[in-house]
Length: 229
Length: 227
Ligand SMILES: [Zn+2]
Image (cartoon, rainbow over all chains, first blue to last red):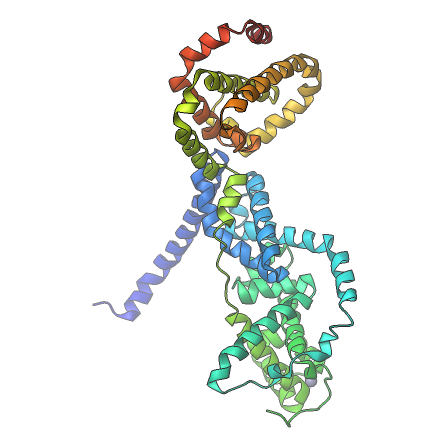
């Protein structure tokens, strides 16, 4: 009957063919969907939105850290996507990658436009928040009592969201795409249009930077170890 | 055996190490450094935790208004539905001769404007109203636009008359929802243009032509523009 060994023997080439075929089919489907949009089929555009809007929105939210900004920017990104549908080519990459790429370009534009605002903002708030040193110590020692676990978790999320905002946009987008949106290195390279090696190193640096922001005592890298916990 | 790593070399390879992407000798060198260097061991632990926390960050639900808002600004689909519903709910008012006449004039004005933008209504096909085609024809229109400026100045007079007629109606009736879908949406969605014309054509022609004839000045302007 069906023994794993025989399945492997016969199944593998067939499976490879099948995945290749399904990849081609997906490509054709995506191009077809986009072509329908371009031909004025409103339902096709609606289908694309339903499929991708949530990811666009979450990318915008994690990048800006603000719900209102995420709403505005994801709407703007969707309009940009709609207007540029004619430039989508299925054989140059998936629709999802292309959409994230346009969204990401918008986010970077937005970041550059508002760089100065943020600079003056942070200068204004500097006296109140010397927040680097004021980071709550709870993060460094996990609260294990169950009734406080939820609170602790919420605190971690909040701090992590804030820490993401403090990364440079290059590191931030790379970490978001990898660790929050689960894209692989190849896909991220396609979205950001940089080599895979660059993607890897940005993700690595981003994670380390985040870890240091969340645990300020790591910064002084001296052998001040042991003690705590 | 390869050379021992320093701290920055350890950092550089940390993600690869954690993801098991390093060659065995290099991975061994990483382990050796982590055993010897407390700071790097602590960093490794912290990066692991950070990765866990990142993975646990919840994905936000899409705000329910977002997709409808995008649709309204692209295909105009949602708005079209409510626009038709409003028309229907206006019922009796809409079919009064004066209102019908006003809408007839508005349809004509739209045709004039589309024509000015380079859209030929007689040969209008589904494809002409896609974003790409509209962009193309707008571009083509730009070149011709200036040369035609003088001619269409006369058309503006017609549009002005239409506005005046509509305003006269609005003084006595609740405002028809003509302003609801904006002009751009109507251009982009073929249904919006056709639907509008269809609803008008299905019930209006008789009273429209009757009324139009009763207004010689407007009628004259229309004829001169068609010639
Ligand atoms: Zn070290």
